[in-house]
Structure formats: structure tokens, C-alpha cells
Length: 119
Length: 111
Image (cartoon, rainbow over all chains, first blue to last red; front, side, top):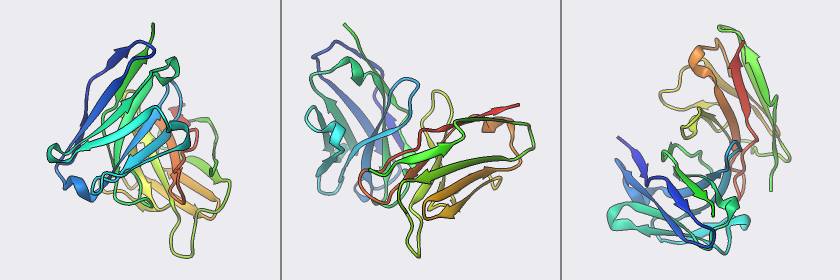
């Protein structure tokens, strides 16, 4: 069965770096783009961007340019989200979600990784 | 960016009754062939689950009591008859352009 399994919760201090993983199974990894979605505590969903799993090219939403980086380990069917120079406002749950193409819905989601940034 | 306005923000419905959630886009997200609007259900502590894509296409495994309609700028998610397990927050999301955006959500509770 299709699964996206994310790494566990993270507790970080401001200024530190975090790298969240999303391991895919049950389908051909390179046939679907991998997207990242942020959900701040008690808030809605915000699309951060996506990475083309075939070419490795990332695309970032405007609010997520600069400190955020998407990457792949294609041999392990794994996508990564790295956030540098963490800020308190990065405290959120981060989801990976696959999408067949840019017109489609997000049909499978990871379980979410909760990041807490606090001094 | 396209703004999606959902209404109501919350609603309480009795078991077996109908729940209707609206989503209005700040510009059209439809062509003559497709409407680029999708609906999700999210329960606390869980990721969103895709219910309906392209405005009216039920995702595999989703109960037939969920239905979607609409085109252009106005879209609706209906749940009938509402069951206890349907208590959740529902989001619309467009895929007309980059970035895809989500509505603010509608929280469905049982009366």
C-alpha cells in the first residue's frame, strides 16, 4: 500500500537547523511530485512548495524562499525538508504530500512532523 | 494569489441531516472542461484526507454521502446523511495556478 512516513517530532532552539524526512513506499517515487505543507498550531494549511522527484528541481512559495530547502535521496525514495536559522514562527506541523501533477489534488499525505522552536 | 473563502467557519448538524459547506474563489478556477477545486477532511492529530477532486469527483474509498458541486468561483461540499465520524475540519483547495491555496477551513460538529 502507498505510504508516506515522516520522521519524528523535533525540538529546536532559535537559530538551529532541522531536516525532516519523508519516505515513500508502494509506488514509483519519481512519478509524483512531493509537496510540503505547513500547519501552524490551531491554524489552516499553507503550501510551501514542491520538488520534482524526477529532475530534483525545487519550487518554493514566496513565503518560503531563503531559509527552506527541499532535497531528495531518490535511491531511498525519500524527500527532505531542511529549515535553517529556525525562528519561533517555524513552530508547526509539517506534512509531505504527493501530487501527480500541478492540477491534481494531494492524494497521499505523510502523518506530519511536529517542530517546536523554543529557547 | 487566489483567495478561497469558506463559509461557514463552523456548523453544527444533527445526525442524519445535511451539512453544506461553501467555498468561494477570488477568481474563476474552471475551464469548460475542468474545475480545479479539491476538498479535504482533517481530523485532529491526522493529516488531511482527499475527499473530492476536480469539484465533483469522489476519491476512491470515500463514502457516497460526500458530494461536491460548483464551477467558476462558487463550490459546495455536501455531506448527507451526516454520521458521527464526519466530525472534522473541511478544507477546499484550488490548483488553478501556483501557489495552490487552501480555504481557512470549516469545522463540522454534531448538534
